[in-house]
Length: 148
Picture (tube, helix red, strand yellow):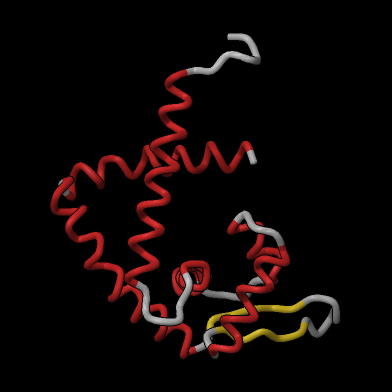
C-alpha cells in the first residue's frame, strides 16, 4: 500500500474507537457526581486501584496528557480535598500526589454512580461476550500505547 492510500479496515477501526470513546465519555460524565469531571475521576480511580504516590509528570505520562493539563486537573482535585500534594523533600522542584481519604470516598461514590450506567450494556451485550473481548481491547491499548 502506498503512503497516500487508505485502508478501509483501518478507517473503520478508527471510526469505531472514536465513536465508542465519545459515547462512553458522555455516559460517564452525565453519571458522575455533580462537580466531578471525568479527568478527575480517572486520576482518583488510578490512585484507588494502584495506591502509592506519583509526580504530576508521571501522571501526565500515564494519562497521555501534557504536564500542564495534569497540573490543572490536580489543582482542582486538591481544592476539592480529594488529593494531597506535597513537595519532594530531596528535590524542591518536584511534587508528589496521593489520594486523600475524602478522594477515596468521592471515587467510591462515583463508581456507585457510574456502574448502573453500564449495567444495560453488560446485560444487553452479555457479560461473557464482554469478558471475552477484554483481552483483545487490552492488547489494542498496549499496541496503541507502544506506538505513542
